[in-house]
Length: 106
Image 1: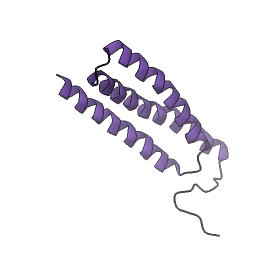
Image 2: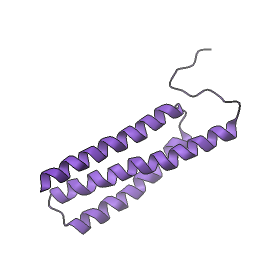
Image 3: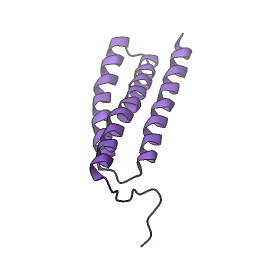
């Protein structure tokens, strides 16, 4: 029986694996959501929305994004390293987009 390298194999310490997955969901989800909120807020403001309206809308949607990410990471069978890469890399990319958009607003 062959396993895909991207799918996690059963571990000897399931509780530790679950705790690591929850930690990835909390901290990686926070990093991704932070990048999402920053990018969404910058893009909405650049599109002409008032600053506080853009801030509120991005934060409200960010709460839903975090919830979806958290549930997806905990339920996912993907390897934890790939999950971290996607969350941290996606958060960094979104933060970079936010920084570029904010620099162009000046």
